[in-house]
Image (cartoon, rainbow, N blue to C red; front, side):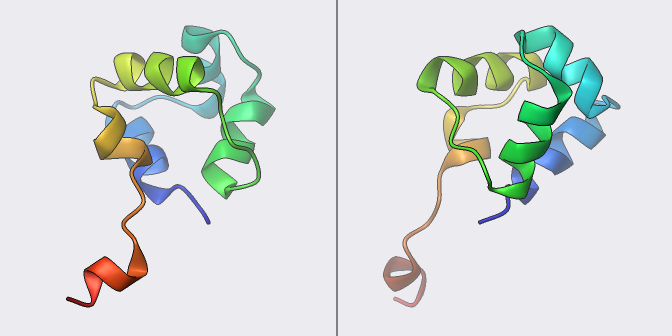
Length: 71
């Protein structure tokens, strides 16, 4: 599942994948894979990304259960 919320938050901060990667200590490819939904980051990496983008874990990484969204 693509992480559109992460990509939108990064773009709103006017950061490239490379710039965000530098801020959190990973490669650009890692950020790209997270945004594409091909990589599940560690909790520590999620927290670092949230701090770099001034967002919460819920803002960027919470996935609503499809059955909950129908109610």
